[in-house]
Image 1 (cartoon, rainbow, N blue to C red):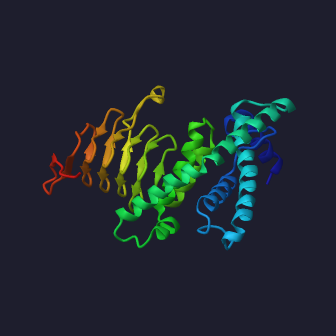
Image 2 (cartoon, rainbow, N blue to C red):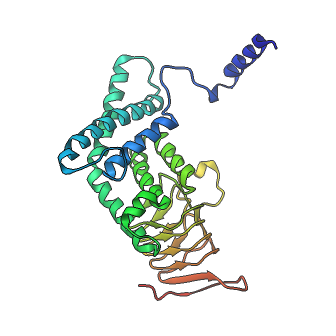
Image 3 (cartoon, rainbow, N blue to C red):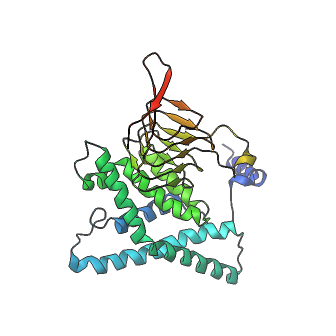
Length: 297
């Protein structure tokens, strides 16, 4: 085999197809590095649930400080990588120093938000527990429910999405998508007490807006019509108001579609138009869509 010929042909492809390779000083965050950050975040968010330490009140402060220090280092490093790429920073040391300071500032702001984030996740865990008769405890929800894990990672990724951090929010979302089968874009806006039951196959698009106390079952899609790339900045996904329940395999499409408060969308429904509050819509046995006003409060 002529290895020199193969080598030259590969190197030539690097020159001619440069979009899919990079040769500079900085690396993108890797899957492994983002997984590690998420693991550290889970340990901080739910002490005693994850991690190898046995916690008690005497050890809690020391262990939390160690975790906090680790998170600051690792998260600052990964955010710094993305900001270097976003800002086209070269090898000028003064530029690098400014980027590192910005990355650390973003990291510290995020860590300061932990108490609020924990409170929101507590409301989500409670909603999942109360919404699933099979759930035996909130502990079980936190430790084992894929829907709750997807919600947790979404809320972390959404913070960085709002801060306009490139790459990392989507990397986080796709990692949990791979492990749970639940695809929540980090740009979606989701209220408190959010419940995902079963969850496999759920898709929530970038511009979807979901209110408080909403429950989704497996296979639900909150999607967009096929649109031109130029429409990417427009609202393309539906709005789901407070108290709505959407059952398995239903599809709701369009940025102007609004599902009114306390409505119920039955399984296998296809919707491209809005529903008023307190509506119940379902597919009957003869496959005709039917709807009526719901009595749900």
